[in-house]
Image (tube, rainbow over all chains, first blue to last red; front, top):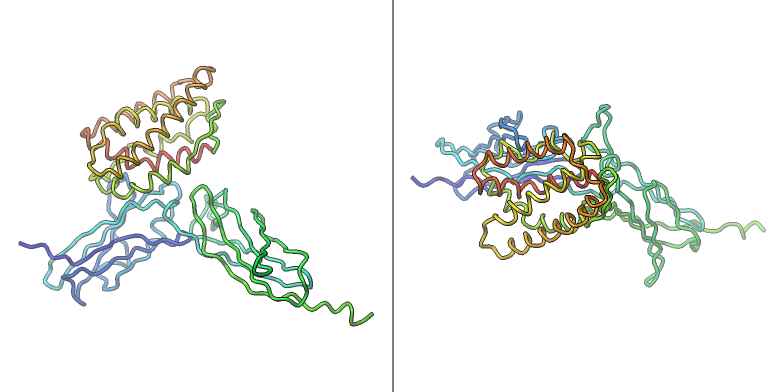
Length: 213
Length: 151
């Protein structure tokens, strides 16, 4: 008897350790096909049913809470699709490696214009992962080699670059009352991770010192 | 990248190895039918081993990969074969560097190294030969994570 294909492309999509399982309907599925999700730690026996993702019609399930243990690191998930007629298709994800497979979102940044400089303040990025003390971990807590790369485009041919692990930077020696384009990227060399850039367009303040003399 | 294994310190290009393996990771791991067990279990990890025994444990696991995994992995896919050959060369380089530590008496094989490697080997030998090869190759990202954490 031909097995129905009610389901395809079961995979984890992860940003800053927000781990979402997604899948697509198969050629044989209909609006009334329902889906149930299970997950497990690689190397351990039980498949565990994910509460809140049983007999659902949507095609995604948030498995962040279930897959956020930095000492386990390797997970699987699987989805069972059931047609109204009771036929089923079960498909498994690839092995999800928590550290390797999470992508990095753009940083949270504030650009502060001054008269002849632009200050850049990078705010910590908290993740759903908790440390042994129960405190939410930042990306920097998890990836020790994390660093920031900053660029300020001064004109068509010249850009200033700064790089480091600290949270505050300043580009000096700029022309007052002039617009600049800055961007900040998170870079994690050990895991070749690079975030999308945060871009800020900022204008230095007018120099009013001359008006009073 | 510098690996600190007790008083044995070597450098290696972990990024290149990780990048090479990531190209074949999903296909190799998909061949592993038995995901209820794990050969490189957490309790046997390199980073949780006495520093003085880390070098010896590393040498033995490297040899396991070279002599029983890379050599016996069966595939007709040329791309995969090229990647495995590149991994084997990288592992040979690390093993050569560790030999220097052995010659300088900084690669001591103590009880813990023997005990942990013994468990890894018994996990390996509990499986059918080809299943063991596939699972161990699929766990290379676990092994690289161990190396990452000793750097």
